[in-house]
Length: 122
Image 1 (cartoon, rainbow, N blue to C red):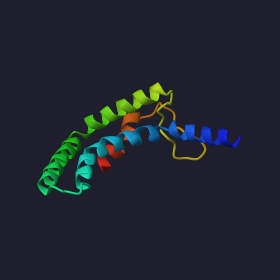
Image 2 (cartoon, rainbow, N blue to C red):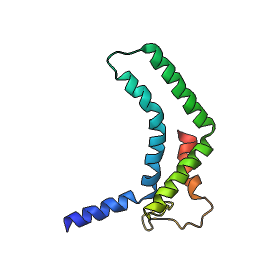
Image 3 (tube, helix red, strand yellow):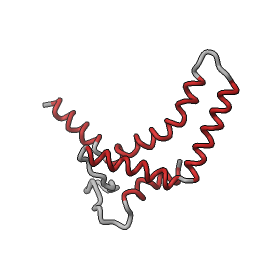
Image 4 (cartoon, rainbow, N blue to C red):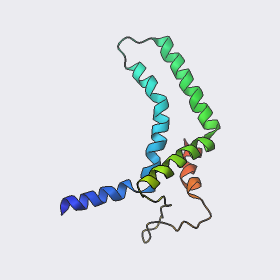
């Protein structure tokens, strides 16, 4: 019975909307940093190649920042498709204890709710 409880808890956690979106945002950003990280870990370091790669990475991040709404909407669409594939609904979390999720009919759309931290805080 303990294994079933742990499995149900894990499934519940994975199906939460924030869990669906956060890894995709991290993947998008980390994917830009990975080549620089790998190059910096080499034993024989070519400093000029590192500087060039960092400049390119910063240019890409700046472009994403200036076009953040479109970038996030692509990520959000990917999250919606993933959630649909695994039958996990995207819901806006409630902040009070008595109800877990707000009703979908709100002034704020899901993409705006989840996009605000990405658009304005990253």
